[in-house]
Image 1 (cartoon, rainbow, N blue to C red):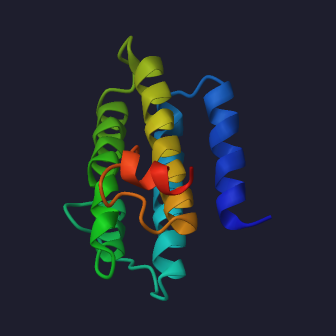
Image 2 (cartoon, rainbow, N blue to C red; image 1 turned 45 degrees about the vertical axis):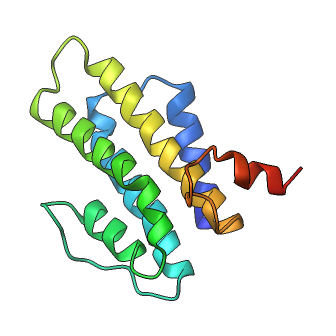
Image 3 (tube, helix red, strand yellow; image 1 turned 135 degrees about the horizontal axis):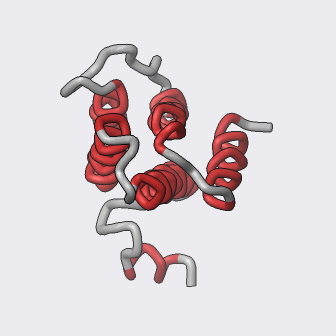
Amino acid sequence: MSALAGIETRLTALLEGHPTAADAPELLGLGEQILEQWVSAQGHTPTQTQREGFRLIALHRQGTEDEPSFNACRETCRELVYHYNLLILEPDRPESGARAQMMTRIANHLYLFVAGKMQVRQLGEFCCASRPLRAQGE
């Protein structure tokens, strides 16, 4: 099983289950693993450094070096960090279950973007749902 397939399997299990605040570190780690796959596929060694306190943000920055359209997932990475912070700082809030579910969906969105980008390099040049890109496949 490829690393991306393993990530997809784990995200599917989390989406079908009931993620909690305790899953936040794993979800952030899955986000890092997703970006590691992209960086490695570009022929680079994934960075171990942090940017703005998070390796995920540093990996995203590294992923855009040779591929400016990879910036399309910048806000997705930031949303993942945002929900991580919410869950870590206030794990006992009544809305923590909903926040954990949202973080899981955001991690899945990042997975879908990167997996799609690895298949269709132009993905993200306009936006994830760009009509010109879809029209090429019609």
